[in-house]
Image (cartoon, rainbow, N blue to C red):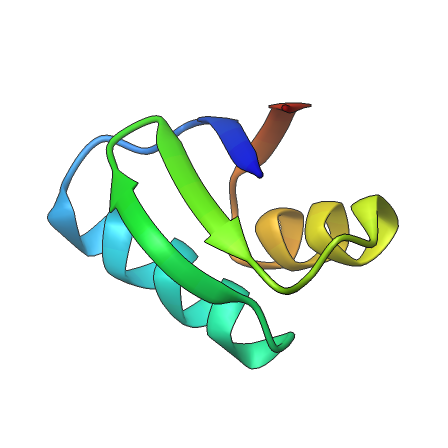
Length: 62
């Protein structure tokens, strides 16, 4: 699943999103500015809550 995320501007942001995804049990395949690919967690509400809790906006899930 690929997440499109608004508000990520640096590698610190990438680290925050990675940590947020790991905290909900998702396996991070790749994470870069504006996009994160995960495996294992597929509850959109939980993913959105984690992203917003880290201070970012989830634009889409693909």
